[in-house]
Image 1 (cartoon, helix red, strand yellow):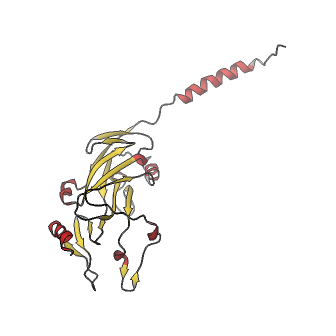
Image 2 (tube, rainbow, N blue to C red):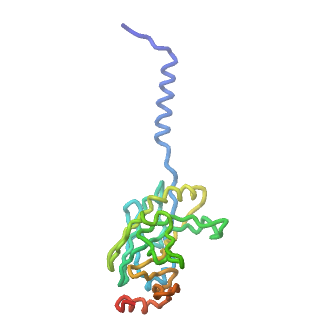
Length: 221
């Protein structure tokens, strides 16, 4: 039996076929160019770590060169650090800071995405009346990064949220900034300065030079 369809159907079908390709062929958001830099790179010779590799979506990139990025790229960034100190690192991290996103003030802080692994030594939280550990401290996965070993840090946890906040801002620079590093003997490195833990009965960290820090690795402090 022959069946007849309303004459308006061909027009409706034609409209559907025209709309679908148009939607499918919409161009994706234009790529931006971002230059990754290592903050204080001129002082990195005395750092306890070295930045071995930076990659986006598995593809290694070079610092200080403009790199095209597109889509949810921040969550795909990986940074590999190498322990170049003579001590085992128990807490390490690095952040990606966007200096064009603010002025660094409390009202307009820089947008950033941080990746850290390990535990801060309990000694840091020791007060006169005992330890004051932060919530969730025991849930942090311990780290034992031996001298010469590599640590691969990812940004999947904070990448999407940070990039959403950056959506309306022109971003062309990403600054890699290392965090505080702690070692198995409770010594630390922070803000370009090494420090040995307080002596028994005291609460004062002992600031030392890089050479003194190296000697402490063999002297048992």
